[in-house]
Structures are given as structure tokens and as C-alpha cells.
Amino acid sequence: GENVEQHPSTLSVQEGDSAVIKCTYSDSASNYFPWYKQELGKRPQLIIDIRSNVGEKKDQRIAVTLNKTAKHFSLHITETQPEDSAVYFCAASRAGYSTLTFGKGTMLLVSP
Amino acid sequence: SAVISQKPSRDICQRGTSLTIQCQVDSQVTMMFWYRQQPGQSLTLIATANQGSEATYESGFVIDKFPISRPNLTFSTLTVSNMSPEDSSIYLCSADRHNEQFFGPGTRLTVL
Image (tube, rainbow over all chains, first blue to last red):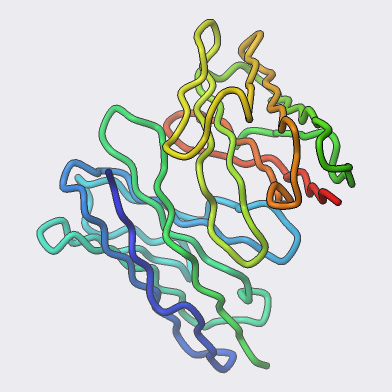
């Protein structure tokens, strides 16, 4: 089955800095890669996703890149703000399937 | 996005008892999912619930312990049976809409 590795497990940055979280996956048939943000005590929220026919996708301060050859994808947050502090999860799923395999999560701490 | 609600939001139960968690989606969806999230951990898929068919369980989860119902396209229940303290966790449902997965707020279960 699919295996998703996520790094780092914790990331501390100063407000205004950029943050990058990286994930690798094992199943070459995976073609959908969402990112979720989970604040303490809240539900995971979908913040951005990318499909294998696209190499990069941006939404304001957030971007995701995908390298299918290397089987890795990354989340980039620019101009970080304290409200970006949360746990971020990457996930992957195969074509035709909805089940997601999640990474272990990255706790992002943005200091003012 | 989909609006998903869960009941109860939290409960404290005695070992050996069962608890049924309800999940309601604001519109019809084909696939619903149940996850478990231990404190500080990632999300682990328990099963996929499709309307009109039996749920599909992931490795390590069995129907006798986690029976699931899916009576229609907007509702599902997960029962945690014969509970032990090891079942203490957050249980989340999710729904797939337009190939994106959205989560309910979760049910925090404590088993004494």
C-alpha cells in the first residue's frame, strides 16, 4: 500500500519568513496530493491540493510543488504569520480511489 | 466545501460499553470515511462507507469492533464496541465531494 513520509516533524520560523514542508510517497500510481491544516482542537481543513498533471499550484501565500519522477511534493508558505501556526498534514491517493494516506504531520510554529 | 456535523462532540464512557457516533453531511455524497486520530498523531483510516453496500475496513480494523451504517447519501454512523481505554481517541468522519475530502469536527472519546 501507499506510504507517505513527511518532514520535518516540527518547524519554527519567525513571522515573515518562509516555511517549507516536504513529503515523499511510495506508490507511483498516486495522483492526488492534498494538504490539510489542523489547528489545536479543530478539524483538519483542506488548504490546497495538486494533481499529477500539474507541477505547481499557488493560492496567495501558499504553494504546492510536485515532482512525480522523484515522488515528492512540498508545501511552501511565504510571509508566515502567527495564525499560520498549526499542524500540517500531507496526503496522497491513487487514481480512481478516494482513500487518503496521510503523513505524520508537521507542527509549524510562527513566532511574532 | 461540504458542511459536516458529528454527534456527540465528546463523551466519557465505561469500558465494555459501546458508543455510536453520528455523521451528517449537508448534501448527498457518494463516499464517507471514518478516521481515528490519537492525540498528537496523524489520521488513520478505519473504513470507507458507501451507501447501499458494506463498509470496507482497513487493515487492523474489523466490523465486529467498529460496525458502520450508511443508510443514505447524507448520513453515517460508527459504533465503537466493547470499549477499552485503548479506544480513547478522536474519531472523525469525512466526505468526498468533487474528489476533495472534507472533515467533520470530530468526536473526542475517553474510555475509563
